[in-house]
Image (cartoon, rainbow, N blue to C red; front, side, top):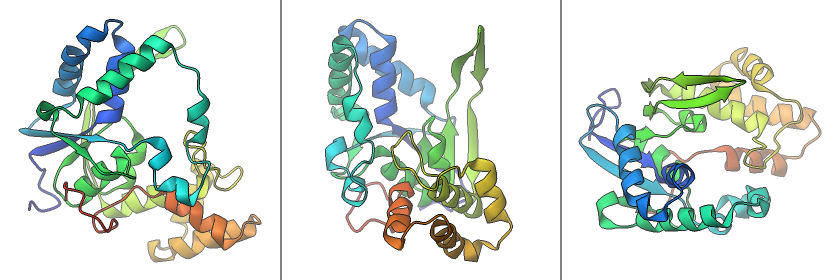
Length: 247
């Protein structure tokens, strides 16, 4: 086992995101294997010689649905082009072939598998999802581009080590804010600046109590408060009672 500050030579990639990206950028379903390999090559951090791919369980099987039934439920109703749906289905099937070294645990998301691996020091977590930074350890954010008005903006790839205190701060912010992208609301009008100001004014050992007090002040009961914490939490080493195969 490597020490937490020594970068692992294994990377664990967000297979969900790679599958979606490959299905989006190619129109020919026969090109998917080639496109997926190309994306994986560009997503492999420098210095990593072994690559794993994390895949999520089916959305309806996600354990977070047992905590908050509306978690990501709105995504089930999204209308997507039928051809793209077929490409995505095929891309996800391809991920389970031997060459991609897929990691999959029923009821867990790819985020959880990456969080467990990065927080244990077993692998570098590779994704564009900033939420993974709520887990300590090594992270690689690949280069990506987006449109800002008429301008194309490119963000360079970033390799970083996320210390535990900073990961804890991000988790508690997420707990307070919720995430409408994932369909759990948190506290109304609790944004990034307000949550950071609230938390950084206190000692980290008091953050749990502070969050619970903020929910009570906003009129929410303990059950709702803890549900928001449990769906916001990306799993870390020791937080899952089954063998993930990545720890």
